[in-house]
Image (cartoon, rainbow, N blue to C red):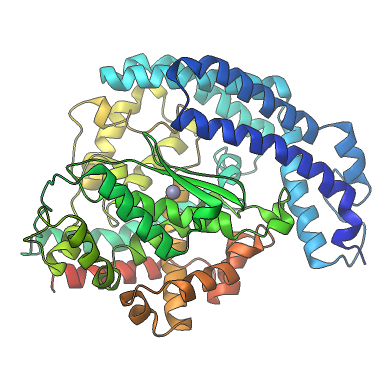
Length: 506
Ligand code: ZN
């Protein structure tokens, strides 16, 4: 029987490549946090060199020879008929990555990287000027390249399929289309009901909330969640993110606004969920797919579970609201727990995705999913995108951007070439709600534990059911193993209905 021990030479090769990726990730983290602005061009060259070196090693003849010892490189068939499950999973996932990497010529990868690096500058310039026309030439180049990438990777039904598969392995356009159509049908009446409700939660006072106190409070919350600061850090950046170089070094960033007590805290809860996943990966499998996260959707389920299911629950604030009030006694003097809970759960159709509530957020994703599919299939031309965007926002959420900056130019993803990425956000919401109902079944006093500020049982459950498995199972298999069924959007709809029944008192 083929075992992981037999695969040691392959694992050693994978770990060498992982060291290159880790070095690049440290530099990318530094770029977003402490690097002086003047360092950008030199840093881009260093990163490109490191990533190129990692790619070259992965598609090298040495790797070909290694893989050919255990699998047919054309089909991925494992020669041993009954390998140990971990060895089977490792070979399956390495082959998946290898086959993808082999289909993209190095010259194509470099051209795409360079085009996207330049496009980001054009995007920042266009967004600041609120003029889509300044970004259009870059977007046209990127869409052309992404269509070419889809052809190189290969597809049978939709050119969008291989792009989605990059971020969410095994997910297809057809499945997403059905899933999102179903979700839209169920969430639209809920949104109407919320909009028609007579209750209008008050907004929170605008502070001031001292930046240092906000960071201090967020650290207390992160520690209570089980985020281990001896293996992590919290810094500030323009766009909050999480990056991990190894389970022993996982870093979070947040941003602080002194007129708003929510931004820093909820970005810490969100990134803390990502961070717990990365800290919970098995260090013994570091550098191999068994020590890597399953998919972006699954990663996002961990951040959404903490940010929304836990962080926007009343139970969580039974414990933390007195502490928050003590940290900001003046600003929050007249706010009750009930008013605070209602304020952090208010639903309001709006223009900006990253500021959207839990309900309307999914509509922002559905709009992007439909538009990017049309761009990739060629039924929508980049120059017609702003009109299509504004029309879709009006039809879906009843709001219209007054300029491109708060419309089609608000997200950086397309400038990054990340087509097929957006759906993973809503998948994360769906996975999170499904895990959440299951953990509440498995730990039946979970609400009481959370009211007491005790998160160890929840973290233990997530570690045991999800984090430690790496890519041993696909996201769908992990859902079935953990919750007894595949992806089911009913859990998110039920969760939202229950929440808004409380907030809007029906
Ligand atoms: Zn996230």
